[in-house]
Amino acid sequence: MRELEERIQAEGTVKPGNVLKVDAFLNHQCDVRLFDHMGAAWAEHFAGKTITKILTIEASGIGIACCAARHFGDVPVVFAKKAQSINLDGDQYTTTVYSFTKQKEFPVIVSKKYLNPGDHVLLIDDFLANGKALRGLIELCGEAGAIVEGIGIAVEKGFQGGGDQLRADGYDVDSLAIVESMDPETGTIVFRH
Ligand SMILES: O=P(O)(O)OC[C@H]1O[C@H](OP(=O)(O)OP(=O)(O)O)[C@H](O)[C@@H]1O
Ligand SMILES: O=c1[nH]c(=O)c2nc[nH]c2[nH]1
Image (tube, rainbow, N blue to C red):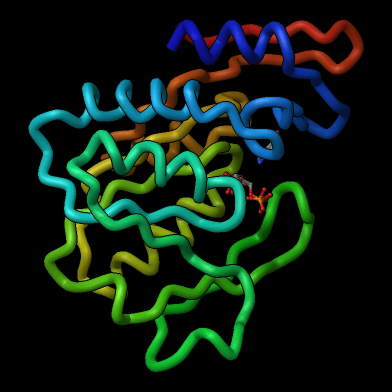
């Protein structure tokens, strides 16, 4: 998606440790017009598929998933929580996921009320790096008997391999910008096309 690539080139910065910082518009300050355009792009890609629910993971996927839902008939958006809470009741689907940016393991929890057998799920997230977050969400869908129809990602760091492994496993992964390489010394960002 050219608009997203241009924003990354204009406002993104490359940090050591394979970190692309795009918090001016994607995952700290949020550009909702851009999010709306991203939702439209996924709706075009996944047109023809039945989507009954969007599933994401807190925190950064939530706003993007909510904007995307407007393009999928206002289906419910469920976000997996990364901490137990007294506000979480009843039976839950749980797994654990290693967080790329926080560099530690988190529980990933969805109430059984909100993920059901027969749900046709679109997974949405801001970043795809090693694929840990998505593998966790896929596991929860498997526990629930829900079908993963596709995966919509804003920024995939292709060189980390998580996206290609998911594609090899048969998932329809639509990443709107795929970073093929990036250099913290020069700030150069190269996209896959
Ligand atoms: O493909 P992966 O290696 O799993 O990396 C991608 C995940 O990393 C980030 O989450 P993170 O837990 O770092 O932080 P967040 O709270 O900003 O969502 C991002 O939001 C994705 O969920
Ligand atoms: O802001 C971010 N930049 C990244 O490079 C990244 N990788 C996973 N999650 C990420 N979030």
